[in-house]
Amino acid sequence: MLEVLDLSADGLSGEIPASLADLNYLSILDLSNNNLSGKIPSSTQLQSFHAPAYSGNPELCGLPLPNKCPGEEVVVEPPISTKGIQENEDRFIISGFYVSMGIGFTLGFWVVFGTILCESPMRHAYVKFLDHIKNWFYVTAA
Image (cartoon, rainbow, N blue to C red; front, side, top):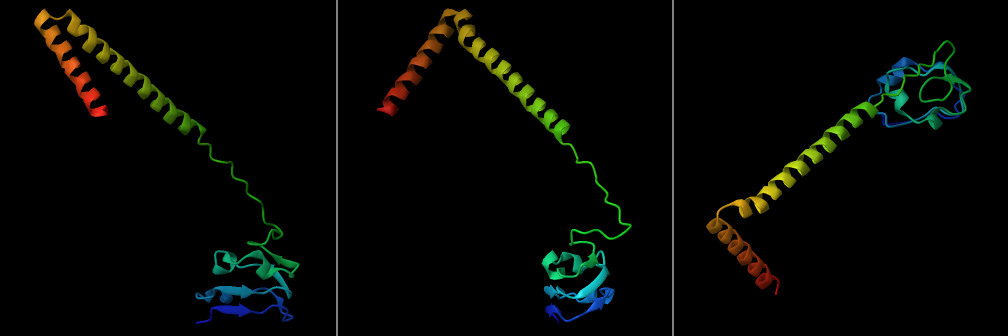
């Protein structure tokens, strides 16, 4: 298992052989300061190494190097906009908030004023219950 391959400043010339990509366990590669040319084999492990591993080879092109190979078109894909999705999610959350506020207000209103409208014994039981809860809070807090 070859894990490190340092061929820097060895006077190599020509293209990088595609068979070099078959070294599956290679973790460090240095081909810098040679006279290599052509495209770095694509869809291989060789593209996963950093650009300094290929520096000093002015005729070398392709990923991970910044210089493009001749005839290679730069395809710029438009960025995917998530603005519409985010707006829909925000709108859903905001509408849910307002619906919850409306339900809470309505329920609270009828709990308080509904008991006032009820018959006298029910109203007295409700006020007595609230007084008991108030006393429990005072005793617990003290």
